Image (tube, rainbow, N blue to C red):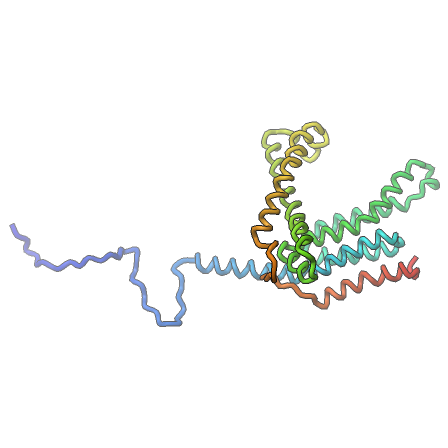
Length: 286
């Protein structure tokens, strides 16, 4: 039995109902994505780029950071007066706060204020001779805190690429650059290993809590210190191999995609920290 409907030619089409035909676009016309993925990825990349540029603009040049670290060590070497120490400590904390490291800034400020107050105690007037030990330790810690401030600022706000570029701008030999890069990457890697060990210990209920390491010193030595010491050699070797693999030891001229330059604020920071130090060395500030 034949069908009464007329036969029609059926043309096979590979497109389904979920795949509309592609629209022809003229050369140079904007092409819009059919989903939000393209826009979100571009927006995320632009945001990350702007954030990176903002962080760079709010930090000093790596060479200026090294100069601040040198000035802090000169304070310790010349044993400057207390007034000079307080002025320079404030000057060292300002770049740390501008860079957005508020927690570090507050911690250093509180520690410096506490140890300065302890160093000003008079054990004889208070009738407590044992305070001489506390006062001596407080004075020594107060003198070393500016070095910790500038070191924390330099290490927490400087990337390895920026540090390498600044060292090469200063014509530092590669025999010095490579160990410095390994040191910069070493401590964050060890800190990450420490956090992983602490998380594993907390998961197993071993010395959990903030005071767990103090209550169980033997477990701290067995589960934290020994693994970190055994892993430190491997980490240092791996970082050295990684640095050499990236061509840091290659002879000749090196290029860098990290832009660094000395700005007016860098020169101003160096002059600002040298004024009180120079006045103290000259005997003006006592």
